[in-house]
Amino acid sequence: MPRLSDTLWDIAVAEVSKNSEEKENEEDLETRERSVFFLGSKSGGKTTIILRFLDRDEVSKPTLALEYTFGRRARGHNTPKDISHFWELGGGTLLSDLSQIPITVDNVRTLSVVLVLDLSKPNDLWQTMEKLLTVTKNHINKTMNELGKKDSININEIKQRSWKNLQKNHPDWELVDPFPLPLVIIGSKYDILQNFESEKRRVICKTLRFVAHYYGASLLFYSNKSEATVSKLRTVLNNLAFGTDRSKTISVEYNKPLFVPAGMDSLSQIGSPPATEVDLGKINARNPIDLWKKVYERLFPCESTGEFKDIMDPAKVPQYAEPEVDVMRTQKDQELEQYKRNASKSWKEMEFDMHGR
Image (cartoon, rainbow, N blue to C red; front, side, top):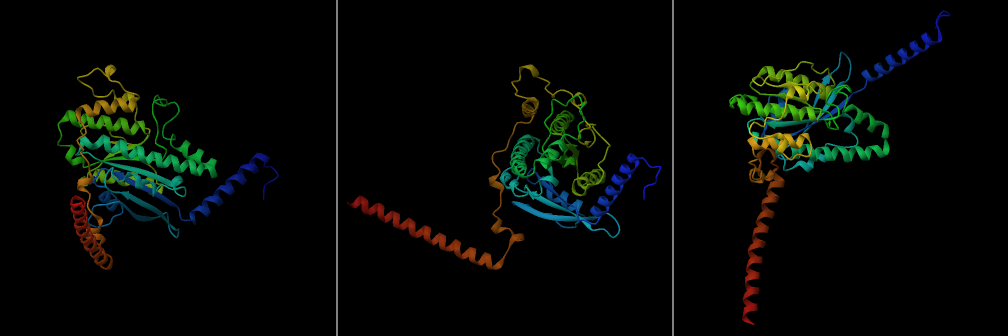
């Protein structure tokens, strides 16, 4: 009951507060769901990262296409457990078109993207990053356009959210192009990067800091052998998967594993592209990201000659064995080989007959 001494403003404030508390109580009784999409370098450690985060003591196996798992986390006593859906794209850049499967109208509002880049293979790093982010961004934009036809309000919220980590008074506001959804870039196998010569290590670190800042992403270096990096990884993934508070600490020393939350870096701190033997003004670039690409690939030219050679046939992988299906597959393979032999004979006979006329 409002008191007589209360003003109309006091009553309105109390009513809003009450409604807010009731809404929070209702949300506490609901199960919240989020999705995290992992993609990145082939054999870069994506599966290991997911298993480590979920505390699953399993031996990681190669991901051949697209795999799914999930995790749960309780918010408190007697409350439903929140659910996070984890999608993992295998095969490096080869199967990038499969990214359209986990990116849907139903989950794009609560989806985050994790790009895992293998630091031990710097020559493939830029191409992997560029191809996967471009394809994924295209699928996201297409999905958001579909959602926009039904719900323009939610689309505007999603677009505004991509800028939330960068304050409007940030000096780089006009120079960056944030990814449309929350993005985290993980540099895996940091223990191998530590053995690189200092100049190469510096170029890789500066370049990835720029890429992360340009796309409004968080950046961290990770090694399965370092508990300190594992701890930071958990903090970042918990934020994406379950909405916990994000870390505000930052580490940009090149002799230590990088850890840079989104929006906490700047172009002035990163410095100019590390072009020691060439005048930056003479490099023909369309935009800042293109300039950094050309400088980076001068030191680490792309060596990838096609990943198809290393892709295994899923039908021959033990983890996907199904006896009844495999027996039928073997039978069909034998029938196909027999058909090829018969067809070959018939073509030879046809050729012979034609010459005999």
